[in-house]
Length: 205
Image (cartoon, rainbow, N blue to C red; front, side, top):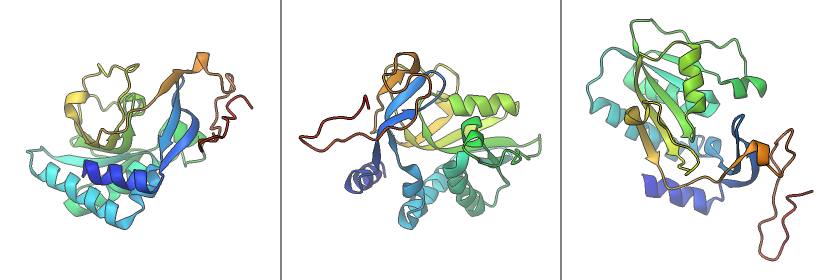
């Protein structure tokens, strides 16, 4: 599945080159169009199948499925339906700022453990924010992500790595510290880059 996803992203040019604000500390050189991946029916079905099989292959106490952010929530809804488990959503602070509805709140019985589902993990910031906001530290059963994008700048020493299952680790990510960013330091937004051979970058425009 890892190779299949890699080939689909490469063939369909789903790596978006630009400059993207990742969090308060880091900017990213590029990003994967994960929404396009999850909204492709054949890929979505394969992702749901592999996650459901893996969950069923392990022993879990009473649990609920929780999707993080918009794309993660779409995937989580299909997984929860297949497993016939309770479902809820977490909208991150970043998505709330991008006009997602902040009134969508986590609603799961306190007795249930949580299986988190998201699309991409780089720094674990979004997951850690959700855990802190909803006091989930002792309730996380496992975390499933389509992509884990490694980078030498980030060391995930948060106790969650051993609970994380990723489908694709083949796309490393290039990060820059925002304070040193050459793209609008005070407000880092996506800047399209010309990447065709012979064309100059417009990074400083």
